[in-house]
Image (cartoon, rainbow, N blue to C red; front, side):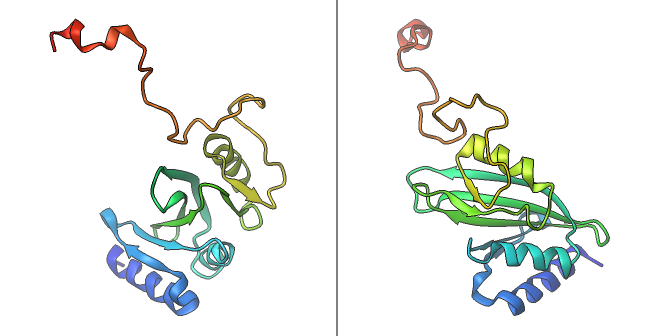
Length: 166
């Protein structure tokens, strides 16, 4: 079956099941993408796994949108290996209180992905069995992937315009 037809069928089924909780549906590069809410994310993930056979959790990550109303987007990538179709789900959460329910209740393999997302972005997964840092030092007081710091040190002398004739 053609990818667009599969995506349309999935979209229809999700809309029938979750209604207005599935929004911003798009299809960049053939990848069905939609936004949902943290109060239904576990139900959506369970439905996709059990009913629509998206049985492989490829990745969980996040995107930081500093200064925008989005805050942080938690992004899930799922794969239906039988029908060879992928899907991306985004959930926008507050930057001030970055919490979302854990997906370890649906996939045990979400454990390390959520720990990595917590470590790098500060997203707290409620109900996670062992939410602690996985890549950085325990006493590191920041989450390195949050865009809260300048890209370069403004005091670096080797980057001064006068050295380059500008």
